[in-house]
Length: 306
Length: 294
Image (tube, each protein chain N blue to C red):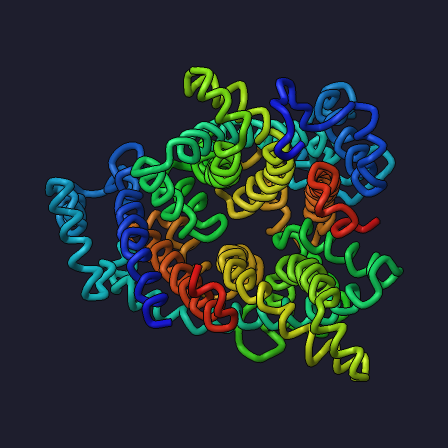
């Protein structure tokens, strides 16, 4: 297991370096002068020069890159052009909100997918199965930038049960979490169904049935735990979908997370802030994937040897 | 077909008439829906009742009426007409991005899978780096630095889109290159290019077709998402994403401005997903009867 983890970490290093390099280069993909874009055409020459040297843009590319890397190692992502606060502090202050939304989305996704997928697998080709899969098809195709406003109109405006936007009480979390979690719920319920159908056909399930266990114990105690192993991997991979969906969900609900910060940065052309947000979200994703792989290897010993 | 004699002319999708009926009811509904969208996009100038760029401020945000079945937007333009023209933008961006992505992805996948070795490792590490950015993140970042324009949206989405095709094709090629018909071609002295194009490529086209169908759905969603975030077409363009973005500001006073573009996106994506699912079930016999709502 230790060897597996070390090997995975070794594979990770070049990817991390590549990610960092790509994010560093983003600033240089800008057509024209980034300083002009950030400060506007009317800015004073002294201000421009100050920003140019603050960003290190007056130095050769390799020096800028070295500076960027050495800053990163110390957790320094540079200064926000507009607020003049450190980018890492800005991101860190938004972290709890983003985390809360992610957990909310995940809870909704699993809370919908497990019962739906299980019900569908237990009665394949019945109306329950058809209904569950139709719902899941709809969920995969429904854009979250549309579902969010619809939920707001229905539950916040017409019914007045929940707040329209913002963060605060648990009521604030309900609609964003549903908006974020639906697509993943839809995808996962199909996977749970397929995986459970596979498991139900296996020999150990027949044994469990033959020794007279109740149907619920066969499913919940024997088939489902094994069926969930591939689900773990896919949940890990789909965290990417959640991280990316969170950007849009945060925009819909004015949720003060890293996604909103990124969009604010884009609006105000605060490129160090944009770079910081992109990098942090990518790093979180890479880390989650690593943890998923380790968890998967721990759950299913066959993976470690492969 | 596995391990059989050298198939000189593989037919990845079977006879035309057979596969339309074999697609299953959901996929046929999807194909019908998709056809409707394509017709609507092609005939937009004739179907639209008014100019999608028309500005009639005195009629702004009017709810659906007889003259304007889906209502009017913030400029007083007819939403149905804008949706029809928007279908052109969405479908053409979807097709363009998927064609570019598939071309790059197939090329990289063929080379990477066939030759293996250090070139393969290098290409796949690059793929890993791109995959380290979840979902739309890199596209958002790219459009943010390149500037909001449809051409940049295409560029950003294609820059990510090829990765899926490359991985898919590479995996297939690694299996195919050990098969007897490829070995036979090698022994008979065919060049690598000839083997890849004439013997290997035809066999990877059906999974590529499935991936492309889902790919178009993904691009339509991505383009609308970027548009919604203000990172797509410039304001005023009748793109579905931009329409949603405009609708966001008037959600409470004129919900119809948001609801109809969103519905159009949902229906188009749903149709494409139905078709993709049907194609996949049809082309991969192992999956038959597993997926789908039928």
